Image (cartoon, rainbow, N blue to C red; front, side):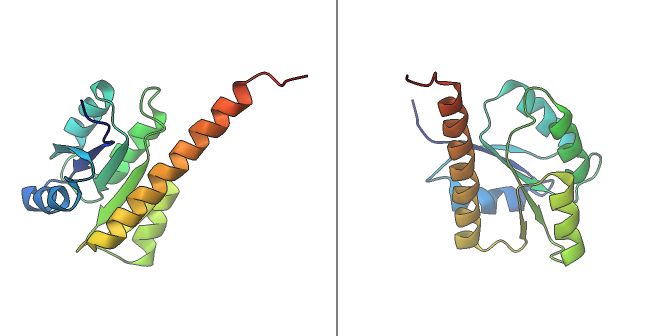
Length: 140
């Protein structure tokens, strides 16, 4: 049994999945999906801690996946880092407005990716701890 967090990589290019897997496989449990439709199915059944989502894919693109994800009762809080080959400010803004927690451009800088993943997962852990503390009765 592993204590590693599970990261779902979603990209229509197998080469990109392999690159991201190579960067992350030592620190995280990796799942992969090559389409938006498959991604949504995985999210409904698996315990995913973070989603690395390609913005531009055939069929359901990353933005459509993100909109569906944010409306889902099961997976609406899964943090998302949007990844795209277009690093323009307009694409970063669009990703963040759609509900992405972070944005990173291809080609991916491995150290930057690891740092952003760590920051997002730490923020989520802090939010869970704060929610837990709020549920505890106040001592009198």
